[in-house]
Length: 336
Image 1 (cartoon, rainbow, N blue to C red):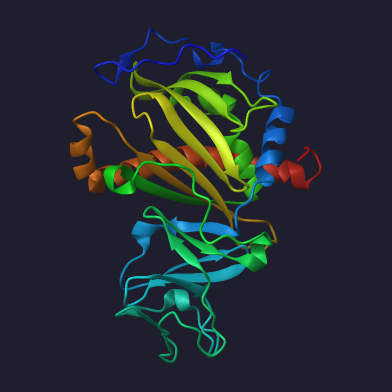
Image 2 (cartoon, rainbow, N blue to C red):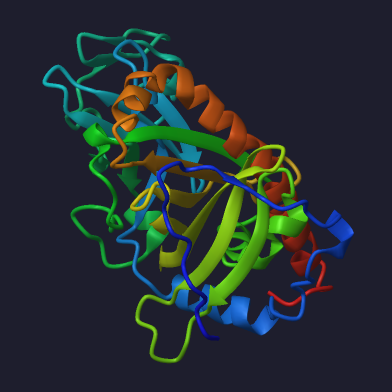
């Protein structure tokens, strides 16, 4: 596929579109969104190493007075900061009588069980052993070697991203009845954007797909983000899958060049019916060299809820897509 001319950045980020065609008259993309192409990209992503690392949630959600907890790949995980500010992670059950440590408070860096007062400072105690954890400034991670079964690494294999302290960051988390593969497959299908999300994306064209010698294994997309009415922001974005549970969208041309959206699919524990559940942990790390971006960063407490709201609207649809894909696969009605 021959790449089109990338969108140019002008003095103002907004563009005024011509009167758009009705939704049903836009160019069909089903013949380009070949199932085999998406399946092959997913297969290659699954073969890439993760080092047994799982994204748990937003670093900002880790408060001083309470832990951050989640059941990851069937393992109860609890995270907090010790007295030195170091991130600590470990099993979410108290070693005394199994109390849920997710409900226990943190006092001066010590996690105090609310059943009988057993205190954990992050060191091994009475059979409770800490797990390796990492805080990258945006997300917190835990390494679960028993769940991952891969060659472990000292840190999660993070993709290149803007420096968090100089960027506008926000993290959205949602949960769906599906497997991580279904979330990754959704992100490796950029062709659905303007059809399934017409409230956010218009004029979407996939201008590049992975080839046999494409080391990055990239899908390149020209698309416009809708702002209001006919006002849009055109960009070129590249989607890659650097790991089995991660897809990264990077803006390479247009407004916000260098900004990334990291989508991490974290397996949880099955629901009461035995169906798999997966958390989507999506980090938006936005940057710009425009003078006004400094003001936007200062307003980040006001902007983060808006970013999470936008991501939530998209993921309500995309998790339905992922859930449908899992339901069809599990019933044998669709290959996976």
